[in-house]
Length: 182
Image 1 (cartoon, rainbow, N blue to C red):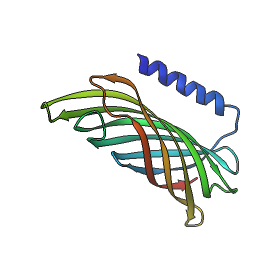
Image 2: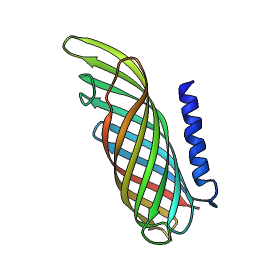
Image 3: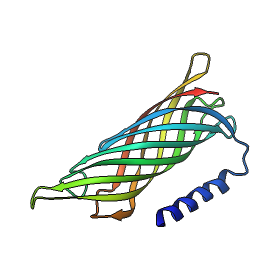
Image 4: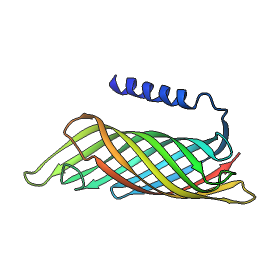
């Protein structure tokens, strides 16, 4: 129940922030984000807010392979999630260099093990992941295909944990996306 209430508050706050701006679906695509303890795969949509900015929505799956980066000797698992973000380009046309900010939520099922003493268990976590990044979007094939590269930095916060505590903390990401402009 706490998850549902938090998600509704989160979504309504973003709706109020972006609700007054005319939006146009600009592009749809896929994205991969690599980080030292895993990989995220997303489908995404971009809504143009003007000539230099976009609202971004993502749905995806996060494969966590934290090894011993967390609270236990081995942490592995994964789960579904989503992110909402804002991207600001340095020039008109929704291409070239950009900065962005994202707020993500991940619902992960993590299996963990400890070696000394030998024990294992499972934790379900709801992770809040704010990040900020910089990147470059290339336009290809008569400006119909958008290829993007980026780096981002942020923090993972375990908002809700069922089971023992597992890793959280700083995160660095490298990503690649490909999209089709509408």
